[in-house]
Length: 129
Image (cartoon, rainbow, N blue to C red; front, side, top):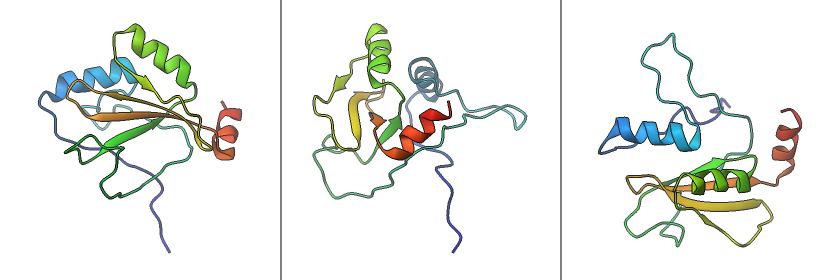
């Protein structure tokens, strides 16, 4: 059976797409969408990805339909960087079997979760850096 090989893009509505793209570029290091086919795109590091349609859950803010989870290599460093720039980040005090998490929102209120995995696949990925 043919299978997809990963996430090819995340598309969502924004009140101010240019300002929001700049925020993601500045604070999370996700470059803006290229304006031509000759420009490079964001290349993700290989690693675990979860695709999980879910019922109503405490993970979602009331009325929210989605949130994006981004893998990070060093959650503490990313949190310090964001907080140093004035971005509010809430670190989950619990360490789970699959890693550590932090939550924040972009300027338009979209939920973001940062995840530092502790799976064997993530450890192998970091060994190749």
